[in-house]
Image (cartoon, one colour):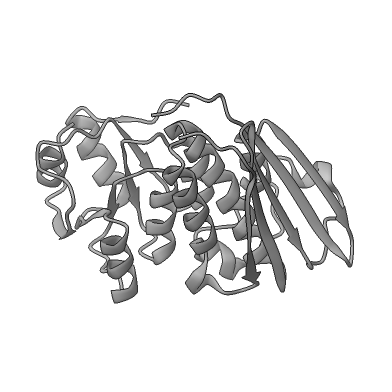
Length: 115
Length: 147
């Protein structure tokens, strides 16, 4: 799925952006548990999480995930945004809950990382 | 790029310091990337190293993260001065965790750390003495395929 479609489906606010709208995201990983991200995710995934802390960005970077979405409109603190900039992670905020955000992306055709 | 000699180094990790959590692993990942290793090998090594680093930060007062890269393999050794693990078999079970609530609020402590280290390693060893500390040794083979 193109990044542009993810942004549109989630009515997301773009906080940092290091990809073009046409770049493809293959899979989605949705969790607040960072070890689950490391265990189950694939690269070229989007991480959807309610954990709006530096740890989410750090974990995404280690796992080669280039797009992170924070749910429920939760705004990250400055160090988290700075880390996203440093690691060139595209960071989005969606007003939707985790459940709704996942539902909207699923409806648009995105699927969970295969185990 | 071919490695002829052994490349090694270490990082001191301070327990409880979440603000710097992951910096050592990120640096090791950068070193592996700069050596031109296969992307999947770098990812596996980075994930295993990050989980080991997080365990030192979460459970111990301090520890050392060492890396050793030879033409054949990447070796990561995480040695801590923590409380040790009473029952290693239990600790290796997915979902088993002794992490306190504040750690869970930071997104960690779901009981997947040790299983994840093992999953991403070709060789995995863990030694622990209660009251003294734990040493985890992980080896990832290089298949000499480069990106």
